[in-house]
Length: 74
Image 1 (cartoon, rainbow, N blue to C red):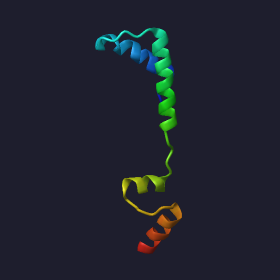
Image 2: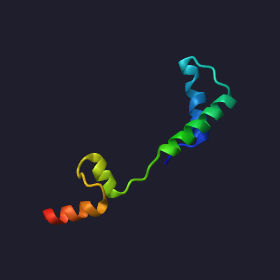
Image 3: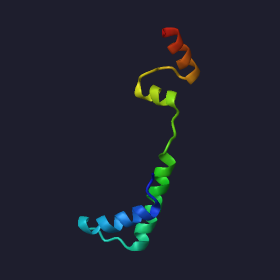
Image 4: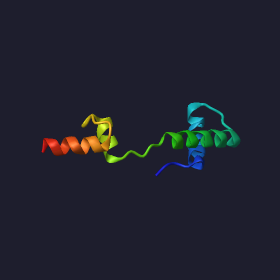
C-alpha cells in the first residue's frame, strides 16, 4: 500500500526538526504532494513473464516466445 501525500507531509514534519531543517506545514504539504505524484508515476505493474525477463531468468522478448521456448525445453 502506497503512502499518501498526507503521510509524506506528516513524515516530513516529524523528521525535519531532527535534521535541523525548518519546514512550514504549507511547504511540507507541497513537497508531500510532489513526492506522492512522482512515486505514483514510477510504479509499474509487471506481468509474470516481464518480471522473469527483468530478473534474467528468461531472455525472451515476449511472453509467447517464453512459453514456446519453455515448452520446447521440456
